[in-house]
Length: 473
Image (cartoon, rainbow, N blue to C red):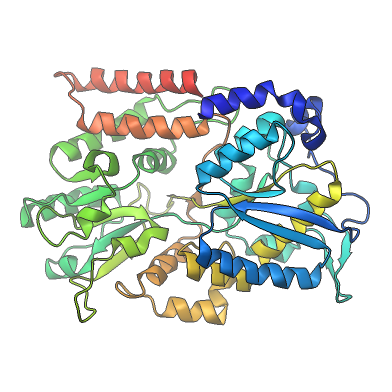
């Protein structure tokens, strides 16, 4: 489907000129911003902007409260909020709509979505909006600068904010909305009873797995939910090549990456680890199991903390306490953990006032501390602003953090504490293919039959993955 959408967008590039700008302009996105703020910024025009997202009813309720607050400031900007299934549903619907110029004004997005939309030059770069010094007058007579102040820029968690510039040309295409990462969940009760120390490095992880296997020979000590993330994170931690947004895109077939894959294969052969694909389900099922084979560590999404908590008994007591920590590192003094969760992008329109109005709304949601706090508590995602940590309501929430009832707060606390560690990968049309292929590659290398020659087996698996990327990307 993604290959088809790429071809469809390329074929229909010239059909979307009115909404997306001409093909020549689209080709110039590497040279300069593709959207210039009109003189005066927002002129008070009566405009309707459509926002595509994936929020359920609980999050939509929070969003609607702040749409009302925004409308008090800008009553002529009418926001139409539309839930569009999953993230993939959003991508596929917009990719189709771009070909006839009917795309929304704003949408939830991941970097590979934006790279796909950029085939048609459909996404407005935000640099001129972010840097604009134009003053905008609100309905109550107060004013605000259209762009971001230095204080507002500095308040964003750096790794989240910088994701918007991962497209190879240095320009800003997205704003962070709500984020998640990966964390290490561990059975704190078991660790305390057996004198185990939470691993902070992969060497320590190997040693802890060996000890757990001695204590419980039937266990699989650690489960990792995302093979894709594990491979990419190891590249980032060791500084080895993965992909590039320009030039040769697929760079992961190298000796450094084969070394860590071979090491993790040995762990799998010893029964130390499993992954979602090899287990056949989220590994939280092993971590929360009350009988049979179980694990005592699980690496998964910070937004899924409640799924890593065992079921409580009739009195509300949990069979064990869950601890949460940063995932293991290769270099403890230079931690790297992945940035995930949706950002938002703004689409080009023939009426520049729609783009400016869309920016005002995006700016409002991403820089309003109260919204970020409430949305985070309702969703399990992490706020994108550092100052949310001092918001009284959110601070009270974090203050309740524990390994049971308030496990989501404990997860968020770890995410905020490691805010300097976040990284993002290059985004280009084909970056999602690379993610899929390195995940499949890792699974294959962990569990596949090497025929007696492990190096030859791994070499072929890597080359096959590169070939698939080049064919399908």
